[in-house]
Image (cartoon, rainbow, N blue to C red; front, side, top):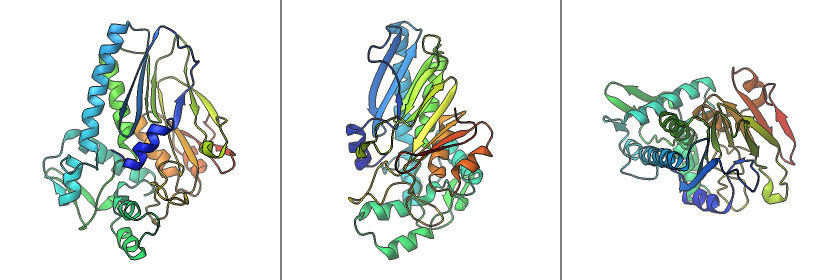
Length: 321
């Protein structure tokens, strides 16, 4: 689902949100980690037998892998790949339609700050990150606009030739949510799924809330202290920021783009708690390019955010705990 550069980074760095657990994990906690979506995905289950937990985790990974294949932009034969290549798709898988409709909703909620149609811009940067062509960037900006994606009974189509979609800013959260649904359907009620920083926590860990630490965006500069530690029950959290998937050697270009200007985000990190990982994922992406992410989040019921600034300072919305 992500670029090779992101994949290599995922191999060498921890996820953006880290389960904050002791070195010796209690015997009651089953844990399985696999490599998918260009990152490490961990399923932790508490209060179930090893056999039950292993079977449930296996079904969860199968479902998440199947969804990754549907929603990836990096495979030309995937439904999203076909849509990007042809500009329309009549036979739309229901899961893809769910994510596209959610993307449209989050685009509206964020007043356009979340926009998956930035892929033409991102493609220009990925093609030549050290010296992107200014004319190509200018042309790509004209192709951005989720409002120009039409969804109806005949499928999905783009109103402008050359438009393309990347679901990297929302699909991982959706996939984590779907993994949680599989666990619940399997009779598992106490678990944590960490999909490379998109986390869903349900129930408890041995009667206590799941502890999750926010990774420091400037850890490569020696700032390793966690900006915050969360206690989660029946909640999701996601982190995004300019430190993820840096595209050029100078570190000035990254994968989070302002849809209005075409410029890359400059905020080191934004973490969001919400009712679902899909919402948290999309909001964390959008807040990175907003002028007042804390004020905006305070206006959204049931959400909270932590903004990590350069040098390690933080700003928190009123509901962040």
